[in-house]
Length: 84
Image (cartoon, rainbow, N blue to C red; front, side, top):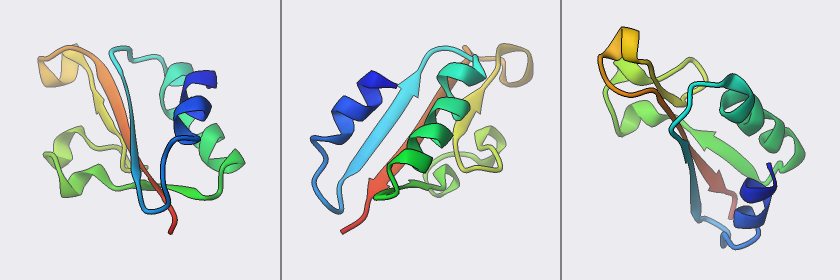
């Protein structure tokens, strides 16, 4: 979480922060981002289905890929927008 919090300090109002990992562990991905969003109300998650195929987008709007499901490497990403 420290990396995400440190990066968030550098985002200007209206700016975007993309958090991305090459792991499928919820503790490093969706759980971490949800915790960050609860603590940093000035950020919100933007639905990734506006940018990528909906087949890799979760209910929360995050991107998650799994080798057994998508036949590509496992990964995670979230697009976080800072309010103006």
